[in-house]
Image 1 (cartoon, rainbow, N blue to C red):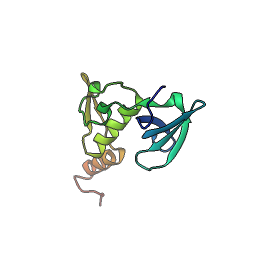
Image 2: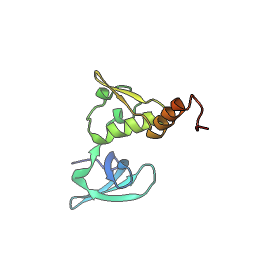
Image 3: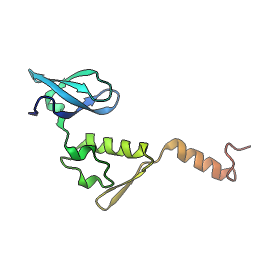
Image 4: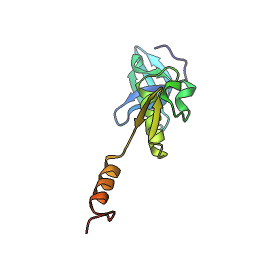
Length: 120
């Protein structure tokens, strides 16, 4: 992928699947990217980076409004919305619901215990 230096790009990250960073250099097919969250430099295959469109950073309630859609901005949007307790996200006419397994387990357990959690 051809990107401008200092452009924000998505890159594969070991701990987060995808991360957002600033492109610092590209040499011999390798890109050096500065992670926006951690400030750490990562060297990845240049072909594995994807340009970050401004729509990727908006709080959209419909995935279909994202430009240049691919895995990284989709996962990032769902993660950001989940952290804001916005568990429902549309993708056109399909509704995506992200529910915490722990919260679901607690709700089921509380229901089995007559609303008292933990069961006594």
